Image 1: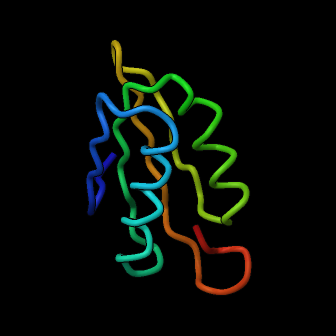
Image 2 (image 1 turned 45 degrees about the vertical axis):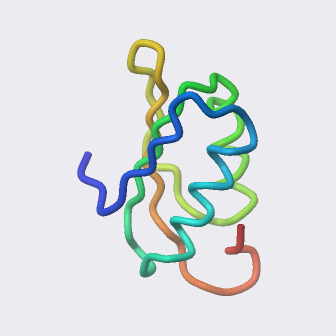
Length: 83
């Protein structure tokens, strides 16, 4: 999957991966896909929950060896679309 921005938080534990994708999402236009790479297995639960809470779209989340890779599309601005 093609992403405009890649955020690699390998080696960092919760809450760093979610904080870093939140920062990246704030800096890109609506509709942009951001790829998040993490070695924190908590991402399997945290990223879908964060997307649901913020309104961003989780396009895919997969495991690649010891890493987890997720792709998130930035939703429109407004209530419920913050970090």
